[in-house]
Length: 546
Image (cartoon, helix red, strand yellow):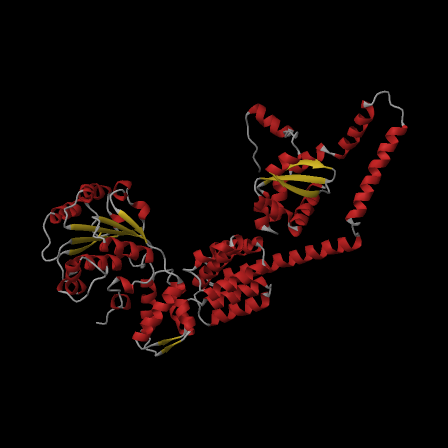
């Protein structure tokens, strides 16, 4: 029976370990200095080397050559009887326990009895307990005392993929090491080595598909490569890998999204038809597409997070995403994600596998058409009624102020307070409390009216509140700069103003301020409650919307 690739090419010493440099270095330093701990916890995703490193550690501390020279290299020699016995899996002193099938108190009690017995041939008896989070509460309690005061000849190595399920009492008694996902490039490099040893030629793009599908786990990648090599084809192409795994390459996804960003929807529909004919698994394709959009969103908000995505993306693909996000806004990415996620749920039981994707693209097409019509309408208004230059507006304002002042001086007033009062009244007339009450009372309707046009914009508007009307400007208050920036984008602002006009009949311009900016600009402002809110406060009720 042929050995699976991940077992065949399992690292036998620390130098062969891919990634996890921080773990390897710390363990080697502790071995060289002779400070061997009594209990370790290896935590991290599946297939990232926890069990492999545990076995290497067990070999190294029991290596006869190292024991004679006091561990000068921090590596097992792989030649002595101890190393060979452990490599062949024949050592009675290296005990591996699967906690998933040994969860009870009785299993741990049996372990506690065997711990007392000295090693048969090695210096240390090593217990490797895999998936330790699966132990029951009683089993953990039974293990506590042994972990706290184990015999000098015993070393425990606990491994888990869900460290949050480990009790604090256990965590306080072990040295914890956190394993990270491997980068796509690290996995590709290792797969190249294995393919060469297996005398198989694999296209670079095919290796990238396998590495991306492995989700940062070397074992997953090696299993997928073994599945592909089983074709017994000496030259494996990207198309063959796509067919076997039921997925598509990152390049394909990137090109697909590129067409979406460019609003080339006919080409997108043609590509969907091609994918259908090729027998693609649209469930996997949708998952990959959503993940790619998520990566775009993360990098759009914070470009510095590119390093954090190294276990998902190659440098080439990262550069492509960084270029694409310069041509699209955050709200457009959010629209794509929201629409795709909603339609994935809506059509998950459909007999037509690509329907959710086609419906999503159609929705984006409609939204894009509305956006272009809105822009065209705004452009026509601007062309028909050109605004005067800023300098002219300032001069006009100064002229009006001078005329008011001159008129006040020409009139005969009994006291100097009267003209000030008259000017204050003139300013006050510009502020309409009735219009503000109307806008406030219909604010939820205004938000709802935007959902069909721009779902993300309606979500942002929920985080804002109309605070006052000054002249023909509605001052809207938000908590964070992010919401302010989204509302003040030209297209979004015009859309909101149009919705207010249609629903309330009041033609207002939007001015958005954060809470801090509002307080600084209007320090004496006091929020006035609506009549409805006052009634609610008096009778102790609440406002509900039918």
